[in-house]
Amino acid sequence: MMFVASTTTFAGDSDALKAVMKSKNYAEAAQLLKQNIGQMADAAEKAKAYNHLVDLAMNKVSKETGTITENQVATQMGQGKVQPYDTLGLADAICDAIYDAIECDKYDQQPDAKGRVKPKFNEKNAQRVWAVRTHLVNVGQEEARKENKANALKYWGGFTDSGNDPFFAAQNHEPEKEYAGQVALFSGRYAWELKDMDRANRYFEIAKKDPTQKNDALNFQLYALRTNLANRTDSLAAVEKIKQLYAAEPENDAILDALNQMYDGMKDKAAQTALLDAHLAKYPNSFAALADKGLMAMADNDALKGAEWLRKAAAAKPDNAVIFTYLGICLSSLAANSEDGAKGKDYYKQAIEAFDKAKELDPDKQMANWGYNRYQAYYGLYGEDDPRTKAAEADR
Image 1 (cartoon, rainbow, N blue to C red):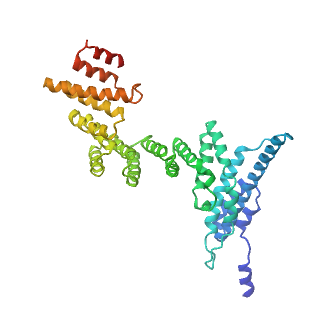
Image 2: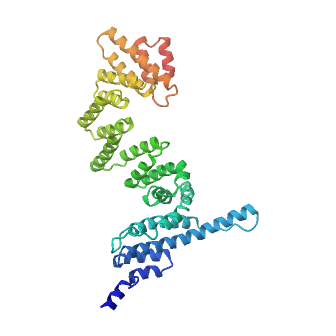
Image 3: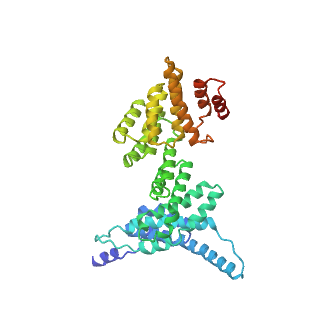
């Protein structure tokens, strides 16, 4: 009985693990691991198998980075010949090493039969993989330049994933803080272009942690969520995601406006009204909410209410030419439909003030096309032949 217990305790690697360890080819070993992992004895064997994959991937990395180093020396010394190296093979191997190291650690951290946690591979794998990650930034940039979007996403995504995985938390992140947020942002954009919204949102959230990238990441995230919606189910899912963003940043006008636009596109006026009214109750000077209320009134052909809300929006953000243009349109409409001549003239004067402000803020009409509406207001107040009307006509 003692002999049987002894041979059981020290039986050695299972046949499933031996099959993986025997292979010296990464692709073959990865396939064998996929096929045999269910037959491995325990978490320790699975960790050992994944560590073998990391070893094989890093062998490829070492080979290619060795050639790079030799080329650098040859160039600096002016001696020897620069040798070609497998750029994509290097990047692929680094990605393989990243994800295999993370998976290895998942099993390496599990307790053994006695309840002890004694990881064998985490420190070595974290250090050696982290040391070569930056190659992914350069290779990803080259693939993006060639418009190989899938490769750019793979390499930049691998860099971003590893930079934010707890497995690499102890490594030195400081040198890459200058550009990691931008890499995450572009990873999100490529993920969206390739219709992987879950991944895109993950990368946008990472990019938003960088203050220099936060606004761009949020704006593109909101744009991505509102586009390529095939049906109502897609729209409802987008609404739920934007609602989560709004709950996290309720004072953010960009998120509020995106949610309002979703409701508007879905013709859910009740939800739209409830959203804006509740927001204004908390933030009465919210430019987006005031502007959206004004635009809702305009859509309902209520120029009076539109002018009231847009005037408040203009006071909240007096440098916005678009709002002054819409305000002028509402006031011109009130003037044209007024049965009181004096009141009509007053509305035209107010409209001209709004259009003139829009012109002052945006003289080249880059943001707002105020020209024709401004001319109409001058025409309504001064008549066709007045020099002021002629000048406005030249600007339309």
